[in-house]
Image 1 (tube, rainbow, N blue to C red):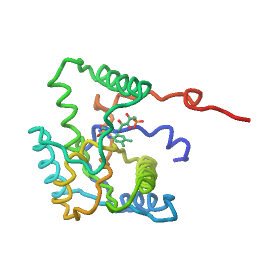
Image 2 (cartoon, helix red, strand yellow):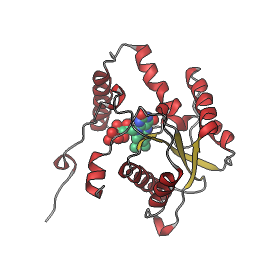
Image 3 (cartoon, protein in one colour):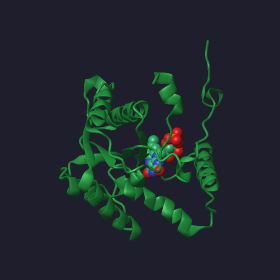
Image 4 (spheres, rainbow, N blue to C red):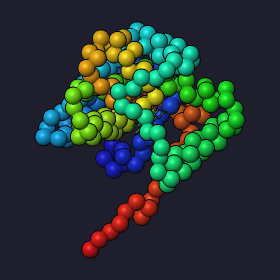
Length: 220
Ligand SMILES: Cc1cc2nc3c(=O)[nH]c(=O)nc-3n(C[C@H](O)[C@H](O)[C@H](O)COP(=O)(O)O)c2cc1C
């Protein structure tokens, strides 16, 4: 797939077929992500690729925590207050998504079902976790974002859908424990990977993007 086409056609996938991703495709995705730029080529990423029994064990454990509304413990804090313009976009996104899925704003059970989907990796056969050393600073988080973006674009260009998931990072200590990752590592993001269930209503929603004029000032 051509680069621009891949960038413009990618979307978050929130319902997957159970079909596993062949090993050589996963290897290709990781090799492409490894080409990412980073501050002084520091390449801070440490990657866990979880599938099979371990994926099921993790999904079970995270789902139980999420259902019980166990308190979150994140390595990277959630945004608390957005500036007004962003706040309105965030709310608009939530409202449009619910409307597209036919879930009313006051349908607490319907909303909870959507939230809980995160912790089952939306049915994806593979969950990827990006870690970095906790001693690293903000530039490394920037690098991790570049790596994540290249990973999901490479996946998309190979027909593999993805969803970035900050939600699962709320249970960072449990994820590290189950994967045997040292506490001195920061869990930056989780990424569900797999083949899109293109019949699922959850995948019918396309997020609305700003046009360049809305975020660009041009100088000459
Ligand atoms: C840092 C980050 C965290 C995200 N966390 C979640 C998440 O926990 N659950 C989820 O369903 N989507 C999550 N997303 C996906 C966003 O909701 C999605 O990228 C956004 O709505 C734009 O839609 P698009 O990816 O289809 O373009 C996350 C995206 C980013 C960049």
